[in-house]
Amino acid sequence: MQPLPSDSSAGGPGKGQAEAATRPRLKMLGEMLVDAGLLTTEQVDSIIQEARTQNVRMGELLVTKGLVSQQDIAMVLSLQLNIPLVDLKRDRVNPEALRYVPEEYARSHTLVPLDATSDSIVVVMADPADIQVIEDLKARSRKSILPAVATPDDIKEAINLSYRVSGEIEQQIGQVAPAEPEAAAAARLSPDIVAQTPIVRTVDLLVAQAVRDRASDIHLEPQEDHLRVRYRIDGILHDMLSLPLNAQAAVVSRIKVLAGMNIAERRRPQDGQFAAAVDGKQVDLRVASSDSIHGEMLVLRVLDKSLSLFDLTEVGLLPEALETYRHILKVPLGMLLVAGPTGSGKTTTLYASVNQLDRNECNIVTIEDPIEYHFPGINQIQVNQQANITFATGLRSIMRLDPDVILVGEVRDSDTAKMATQAALTGHLVLSSIHANDAVGALFRLIDLGVEPFLITSALVGVVSQRMVRKLCPHCLIDTEPWADEAAAYLEELGEPLENVRRGGGCNFCANTGYCGRTGVFEVLLLDEDIRRLLLKGASTAEIRAEALRKGMVTMRRDGMIKVREGITSPHEVMRNIYSIT
Image (tube, rainbow, N blue to C red; front, side, top):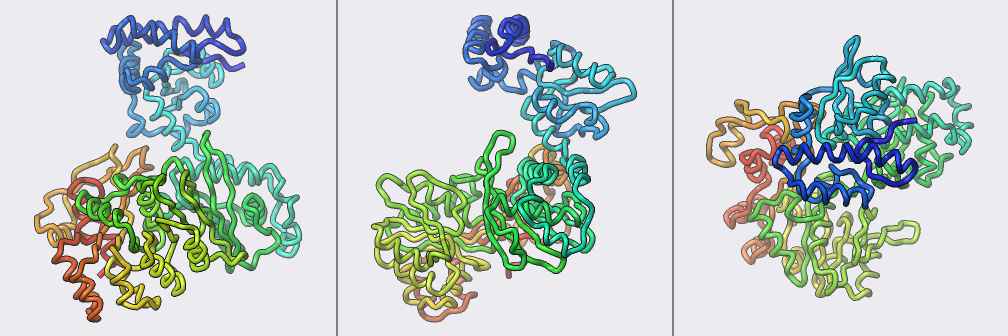
């Protein structure tokens, strides 16, 4: 039987035993905090009683109420117990130490083994005074336990980064039957094969690791002699592991069954979706399949709602650009386009835009393919080709629903472009995305789709063009000298020399990449009378762009270099994502 956590509150099975173990531990932590001058005796007594009443840990309740921080508790425990305070963002976990503590045990007790020798293990704990857990670890490993302390959040992050699923997946895949001839494997593509426990477990592990790694996509790509698994993290693909080819059919079939796809159809592309629970949170996964030269490949888009940004202040708009963009959103009618390539964050910006509109006084209707996130108070319509619901036909039906604001997922063809323009001209605010290199290029993209310039000048209010760049990891920042091309690009955009540049040195928190998370780089084009006049005269892209710059438009290049100056990203990242734009 696993021991009860020493600072658990009373209640449930073994109530008397829990109380006996709990009271001294709660008092001990409280005394430490009082001795450190962080709490008063009255506050401690009140928190102890409230923790027992609510059946929660004392430390969690203190942090929730804002009385102390996790770092405060960790520092007090380190000083009072005379044990090391470990920075798990910098101190790397020794993989050899992990084999002494199972992942499930580490998660349930909020601890992670840091290092191991022939006779001892250094274990970083959120509760290093829990004697029962220490004795249990000693019995399990047959080694002495050297406790250290860190914050619970850092320990949980270290567990996610350290306990990789590769080993368990290899163990599960090893239980799959040996490779068969192609004809025999095809005949076995039935629900029976996907019911195999090893395959079910393998898929669950792949999804769980992707969520913990903050991956946006999972790629399953058959090669000549193996199945390649890659994760896209912060916009960059990383190799995760290789699976034997004999597991490909079973893994693909399992995912297709979950996504409601036809497992017998391998030649035609298919789409599907399913939901999964990982570490107590729900994620949605969109699945796309296609046949390739070596077999069927799958890409799973991971939609983790807890990581989504739906506030305009958080997408990366600089203050002036944010003010201009909000001014555009206040117009009662017209069309606003968000331009950029696939994966540039257009949908996030559109969602953040809709999210700040008044849902009580406005009827907001969307037509999307697919609906990635659900919003209360907004009427969302899913594109359905089989029911003849496209962006164009959906727009026609929406016009009869008395809308105030219409969000069109993407202007991708002539019919949609013309319908969106007409909707903007008939008294609606229309928000949509379009594939174009920059803000001025979006104007000519509309012309290419068959919209007359005089209609564009009448309907279009503004265009936002954007890219995504990786943000520097805040936990491993270092100052270095810029490279020659970085210094030249910075000088060209901002007119000032780049003396030094901040980079991510690499740490556990960012998986040694130096980057963690992404932000947007923008240019906002507001159509005024001068730009409209140029467009009607048939002016070139360069002429319209020059006029926009004269009026104060900040280009994506300049926006990116401003974010370099503010220490948000690196010059290399800006140049990698934006400097292909002429």
